[in-house]
Figure (cartoon, rainbow, N blue to C red):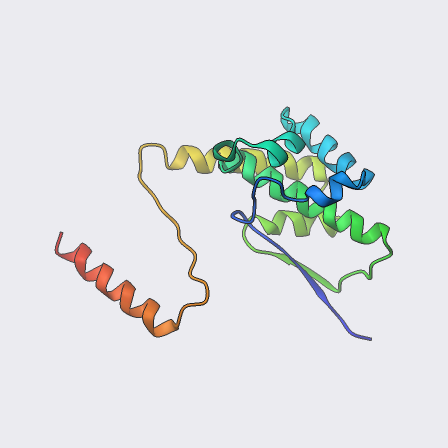
Length: 158
């Protein structure tokens, strides 16, 4: 028997129109999951992920519940289609909460409350503090190291 793991994504995988094909096929699992989440955070998550505005979807307090809800909906859909149970579940940052919900370690409703608060606190932590995060994908390791070295030397002399 082959073992497999499910890895849930973190913040940054959201975009306007995500999961559209599932909603337009009238998939009740997705609609029910998003309706359930919307009740707990008092915002229409389906409308937000389908119509935006993008700046609102990209606010941590909304991004995080949207990603959690999408992950749980996909997992519920997987189970409904008689998908194999994973041997392990894990998540990248925010995705850890999706793994906890899908492994029945915490309730979806509790995770929504925690993640919504987590997003609010993350936003408050950077108010009036310029910050930036970048992802490095598909670039040679030596080029990344060189760019970091150049940038760090510039900071030292500022």
